[in-house]
Length: 255
Ligand code: ADP
Ligand code: MG
Image 1 (tube, rainbow, N blue to C red):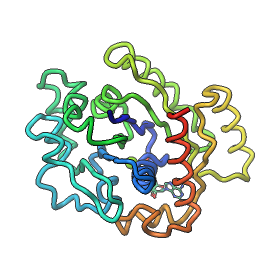
Image 2 (cartoon, protein in one colour; image 1 turned 120 degrees about the horizontal axis):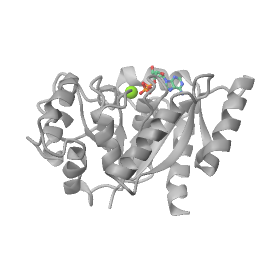
Image 3 (cartoon, rainbow, N blue to C red; image 1 turned 135 degrees about the vertical axis):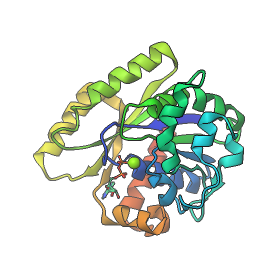
Image 4 (cartoon, protein in one colour; image 1 turned 45 degrees about the vertical axis):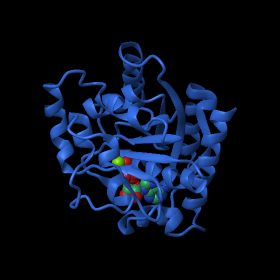
């Protein structure tokens, strides 16, 4: 059975997509079978994995509205070598389309049954909003991975996110739990980073990953080449950090 993880934080620009693409590539390098699902109409996880948004015949939108199955739509990316359920601007219409459909919160969960035995991990790249796409992601997942940028307002949105997770747990998905808190764009120098880390540990305890993702220019450059950083510059600090995260991610589950 696949372990399904929503990578979410309603704040934009905290490293959700970067984490999805690079964790997917790193887990694949460690011989895990991975499906990455792009749930953001911006399609950054799609292009960052080397797939063209413009050339898609079908996308995750078709899975959500039920016109296609996951296996019909997913594509293997290269050289990342994991599978992607891609997205493009069509997904903007999903919110409205879902309104008229039954079980609108659990359509992704239903769609994923058919691939449950084909993958070890399914990662969901969520949009920067607590909307119906994010609700579908949380309803389908067992774990929530929350990237947090260590700056002053980092903790502000977390309360709303945790309340949403709590609501989904009660209404739709009792097995949902926080998988881990990931500190991204980490700069070890400022004292603020330290303060945020202290607070995160106080609140989330051992759910905070020991691995931190440093600010690294290679991580910012690699998406424009459609490459996970591991296949762009494998010696970079970003590549090494995401490999370390994949290791910790696997071990945490096994422990
Ligand atoms: P989100 O998906 O949460 O909106 P992204 O992963 O797209 O965030 O990251 C926002 C921007 O920051 C992107 O341009 C990305 O390339 C860049 N970025 C993300 N993580 C890092 C990092 N660790 N170091 C440098 N740049 C990063
Ligand atoms: Mg994103």
